[in-house]
Amino acid sequence: MSAQALSNIRILERYIEKNKNDKIIEGTINKIIQYKIDNYYKELKALENELKVFEKKYKMETKKFFEDFEKGELGDSTDFVEWSSLYKIYQRITERKNILEGK
Picture 1 (cartoon, rainbow, N blue to C red):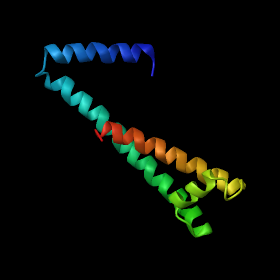
Picture 2: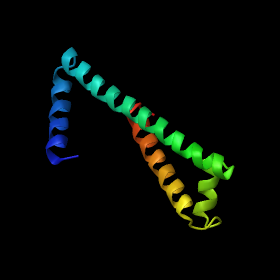
Picture 3: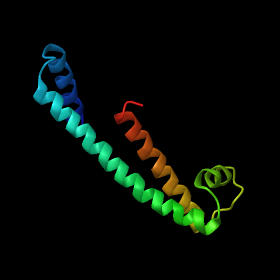
């Protein structure tokens, strides 16, 4: 995020503290957050589909695979590196979505 965007967020925070009943600002912020959450859900669904391909191919759940892969127990085949990368992306997006959902 740019320095300008962070500056604008601080300005908005000060504005909201002084004008707590501004429904336009509140509604706009809520829409932005919901838009990002909705996009994260779409991205997660697409990633889940990709992860399922590997789970089916190797007859292993992604979480178990990732634990074993991180321990160095599975080797570093191209499939495993890709599977691991997809799961890391999945985790990052989940974390971002959870933050926006207040979790």
